[in-house]
Image (cartoon, rainbow, N blue to C red):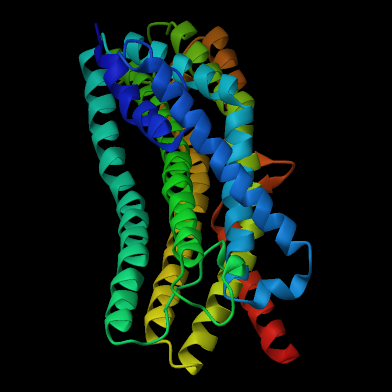
Length: 390
């Protein structure tokens, strides 16, 4: 029977299944078939990725072609997928920890209200990047096919937007079975990697949400400590800080021991986002100059999408850092100075532990807005360099 705590984890687990990152379908009548379906999806995606990378090794000049823009984009998605697939145990452990913690918190009405409120908020926020990616992929798949059908009816040459396997198309292009098979394989590849990217977005957003909820409950516990304060300046009833100290230590430990996975994935993503954005901007410029308005519009929208995702992902790191500051503020705001020396000593220990700022990072590569600005600045620098080279 599904518990309330399972419902809190269900959106994340469902999206991981949707993306092909989850292989446990226990309880489903087609569990084995679904498991092998997800395995097959990943095998197909990595095969196409390897084929594309092998072609790219033939020369760096391929990057400036229409299909070359997918080299950094697919490398980013593929590398992140490898990181997630190779660290399934870490992801499962993180989900297990928070399922158990939410089960404990759920027995307290005010804590349950915090969980429900924050989960509803993050569920709504996540719909934005999910919707943007899905709509863009839908239009990028359908509009060119409709446009090409109109051209075919008029007896004109084929039209195709940049696709990962465009290097397989013959020149000049002709509407042959090989032409349509190449387009079909490219769209099949998209149908695999877009859900995988959405699943990684979900993983990033929801584990950040779990920490935010954890910290808000901790902050409320700190506030509750002063409920029996009589308002005088004399020593008050001694606090029992065991639960608060254990809670605080768990928050710090979970972030330090489990968030390196997200930090590593974001380090790779920030490195490739600059190149991806640069090449898409360059493709926007060249397609507009060549009169391909359809492609220019797609590229322009994709640049905006990349920038929004960059800010959203790196903004998650800022949100985690803010939680650390909230904990310190909550500790300072208690009436700790009215407590016996033993309690003051424990409070000081919590303050020292709180000085270890909560953050998403890997090898000193921290996820925050400063990193997001570096990514955008680097993309502009690369674009300027390419234009200078022309």
